[in-house]
Image (cartoon, rainbow, N blue to C red; front, side, top):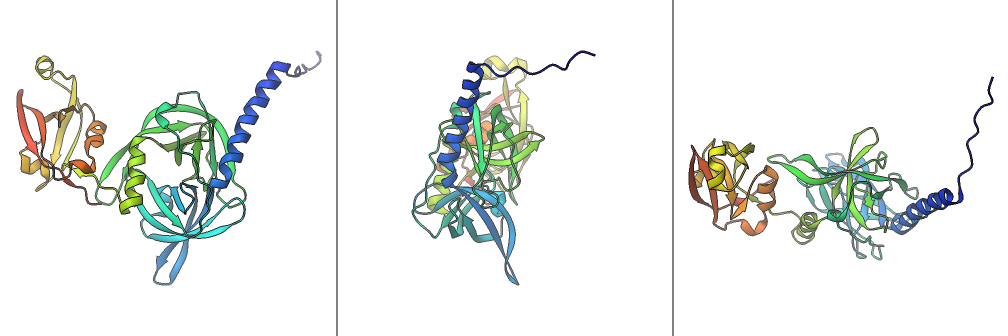
Length: 326
């Protein structure tokens, strides 16, 4: 019988690499742990305030603003308690929630919070080191590390009256523990690039990216308590432009209108089912996500041009988006 193989000790260079990895994760944890709170969410009932769940949140400003996931606070939650790594506990109220981006803004009563630095998820690369930090039980935080395993993912989000796709969701293999929803996904410099939102399967987590779009969501929640979005009143999906029309339209893909909401802006403008939407306000719309990105508050009540292909014929229409009511 041959002797069992004995693993050779790591070389000096391997040890240095391991130490560098450990130092990077440790530095991120030490930097962000004071900024991540454990949430105990309370729900109002006829019997009074009752526990409704737990989660995590990230401090945005020294004067009490916290960012978390909308599904953590739910629809009926108005307040709760936030516990920080140093043991400090503060009451919070929900300033605003946006189910269509799965983000919510809270305001804690205490001041002198340690705000996290926000990064830009658009700069992430597949394979890049990321660290997930939550504070599910108020016990100093939970830290897991991994890499960005996918970018550009889409995540369905729904409110009572509307559905939407969250764009450019970050997929990571950094394990997400129970209660980590609403916590931070950070890069190796400790900048928050995402808000952890869901477990997609064994070893896979998803995070809502911090980018220009979500920065606008945060600003809307902070100033108005809600996010204003334009609304057309159609349901549709992607479809290739018929080959004979590609040269004339300059597009290879478009959005086919499947349904038009009665009395909505699209119906009033004369858009019909089976119309192919090529562009809105001069911007090509190849996917539903392209149309969603255009539906910003500035377009509410503003006439915009819509170019459609109807039965092989180009039609120019004018449409006035309304405000989406959640």
